[in-house]
Image 1 (tube, rainbow, N blue to C red):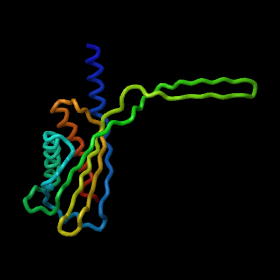
Image 2: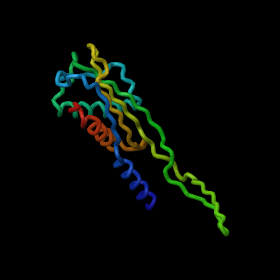
Image 3: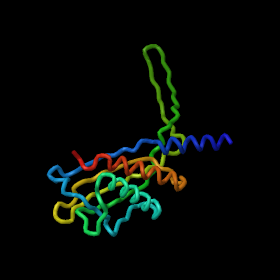
Image 4: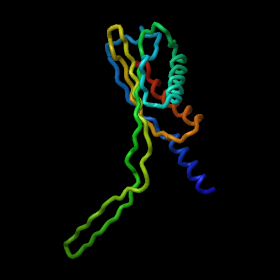
Length: 172
């Protein structure tokens, strides 16, 4: 029972871990001309089919709330790429050895990693105008994720990532 509580607490911490997002965009673009979007037909998101669907649904919901609509003849296309990686362990145990004497000092210390690093996912979203401008907006997010999370937890996490990513679109 105690182990279940520890695992639950770890899941809560991972699911609430910060979502880091950085943006870049073409300052010469008139963002007000973009009203409709669609996805590239050959998206290879790097996520499972189900997670890709969850993420696309979250993006669609967010875009709709901002006044954009999905279209067969869009003003721009969205591409999504992601990769999962394991972070280096952050917890270490220091082992030190030292001594001092009259006017003499010295020491040695090493940090030994304990446990495993968190699993993280980097998601890159590109907005591309195929009619001339090319790539005009990009967001890169990094967030912890649990590969063993339930479908509901995955959906909630992907929805939070989409909200954070699209929170600053269009740029002002």
